[in-house]
Image 1 (cartoon, rainbow, N blue to C red):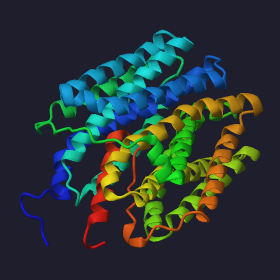
Image 2: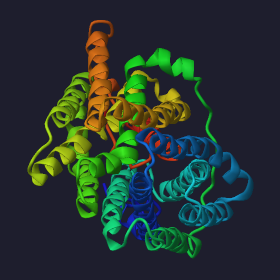
Image 3: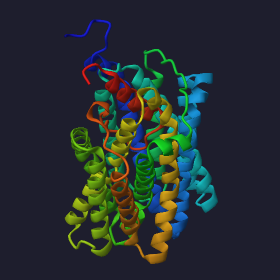
Image 4: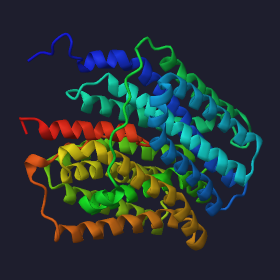
Length: 426
């Protein structure tokens, strides 16, 4: 049955969201560049891995706060004002990094950057979600994921344009962030209505889905640790600036290639076994990188792509598994707890991995992540003997998600899952 004129189709939603997606893609270029740039610059300044990890962790602390607080601010003052203010602040923060090369200054600036980027994501994602109905929400979220990771991946390559020890790359990042806001600010579309949803207590989430909650924590730890300290690891094993950018890009585009197939597989088979398999494969690849340094750079890129393509999609798998464990009326309320659990993992990741690198050597960058992923596998195997599989008619779909999932995109994923579970066809 064809859609009525009043019902948005995917094509009409794409046309209405094109300028926003372009702006968001530019914002991702800046986000992808700034993380790698700061990690490389910190290493070249002689900061220890632990110090760099602490600096990079502060971004995720700010991101967690911004993701949870921005929706309340938007309700009071509106999308446009919040977006413009946060973009201006984020643009200024990256420039100040180049002026004051100081550990404590960088910790504070990264915290501010994290808060700002979380807010920018919340506003952009809610605006994008306003263009989509439940019938096309899955496609819109998938397109958002492609734009997000493509921007982040290409942002890594911009590292080759200038010396990280100079000002140009910091200026370029600031320009990208500033230009990214133009399409949204000039959009003729009215601002979407924004309502904060009810919340679920963290203790209740842990009780309802212990495995899903642990998976969210582990994914947050691994993803934040990789993107925060991956450039440091690459530099310390002898890669030059160009190779570092390719190393990070490989992990990003591995995610783009594998996330959708992994999601499809998880929709057809026992989700826990898929989580166990994907986490185990990621742990094995991490272990290989720990004990064996590939002499061939191409092999290292392949391993990085496989690691990113397996480890990062665990987020979507865990969200889908948690949805399987919840009643439809609990799904949206759970989004805040999911962001909190993942955020705690993201804050812990860079600091933990950096301390491990300082204590045991640079190769334990991957060794630490391998251990954490292996622990998830062991817990998942234990849960198999405790909890029965979710009945097929209660299963939700695994929807690809982006680089730093905020409370808004998780809410959108929960709304889609809720609609799927309540559909008569199910």
